[in-house]
Length: 314
Image (cartoon, rainbow, N blue to C red; front, top):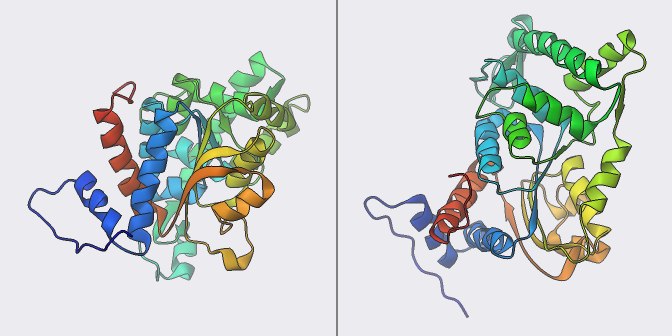
């Protein structure tokens, strides 16, 4: 049986060295270190890797890291929520979010046109600029196509951007599809609705994407999942994998717990009961703030991939 070893700091300790030491600590530390190994095995085996995340991850400042991972060709498929898309676009056109605090006066914020997300602020002006740009993008797409899938819509918008830190830009540049099954649930979706009032023959097809993501997978493929948070993004990925035999590897990072019965808190073991993960799947679950746990875990995995020659487009 493995024994606990005391954590000790040493001068110049790297992130990789720090996280490696978690392998002999208790609680969530060892779970995070095990997640590193699962992600490494995904890449070593040549698995098709899903990266799923919710919009608050993009708000937090992880946007550029997700884009960087696309540039490095770590994920093969992204699944996210509509809020992620609009916030990626806001930042791509130069908007910035601000750090506030969890106990700000929300009445005053509302009066100033400032919207709080935890301890972060998004100004109304950012939404206004986003809405103007959205109409420009949609007019250009409409001139070429009257009917389009959500993933193709996001690909076309990505091609119009010029921002290395944009998820849409890097996914389009590296031919990584983005699936967004809840596209209507945001300002992005509302802009699609407004555009459709002007162009009633413009159709955004969300059902065809399901056919694409399912047929892109096979029972013979090795499949891996890195799921940050939960929600519709997580379920879309695990349901697609269920139809092709389930995931071989999975890392769940979340603040939710299984006792609520929610999908966000559902464990990798529970997923096996549905066939979403294979019975012998290698999996790790890390409970904690993803804005902390994911950069630590993924940075360590990247360092190890670099040493093993597994990184592309460095």
